[in-house]
Image (cartoon, rainbow, N blue to C red; front, top):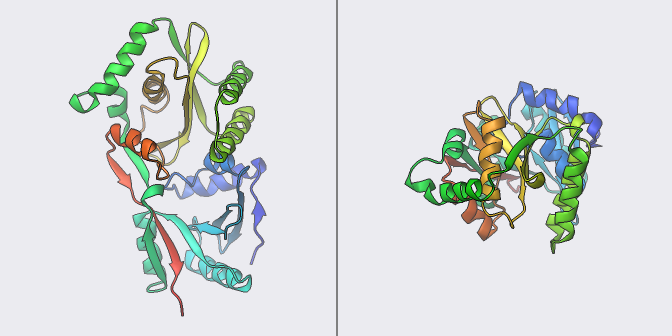
Length: 296
């Protein structure tokens, strides 16, 4: 079996070549997402039987895999099972969509036990619904947006370029310095800093909202598949009421209006985050499953 190798920025072209040929459903499988988080966990990949196989290992935990991309998946999985067995490690595949789950069951029937992971399931929205905010169900969101526009008529929107890259990085570092972060937020901070620093070498878009010239919000995302964009990061200065709702709206309006759907990733089981994501009225929740080998 080919050896796993650590993910680096230089691997973007190879990994994106697979993802472009076999567009994913789940938010986990995009190069920017993998790059954002590879500073806080070990992310490795290899090619087996023409398939891209990605492994993730959190500190002090056993590794897990994502569903192979392309190639002969059954052959790749069989080789990976043997590889993990030789290392006396459990074999697990995480973030399987319903379609991935059905494909795995068809390829290797009765071999796996599946567990639904609600905390990791993705929130899918209709892009134009989040831009237009029409109807009673978006009344509160629309009020926040309107208040922002009324209070800050000197707002502006722009995209990330080499001209504002260092300013955005400095702004984000200043916001983070004033926070009381958890380890997870610290890991996210490191990923954001490196993504902004290397944005010219990555394939994401980043939108910025200013008030009176001051950066008050930013968001970054990228295409996931032909119909769906995925939003990885959304940050705002909470001193500016409505800034989160406005960056959500304007980023979609200026960058992603030609995509039918937007994937805003998972809530991680965080109660406040779940309420916030549900309040935007998802089109659906993309269920994700974890597969482990049956014993015996």
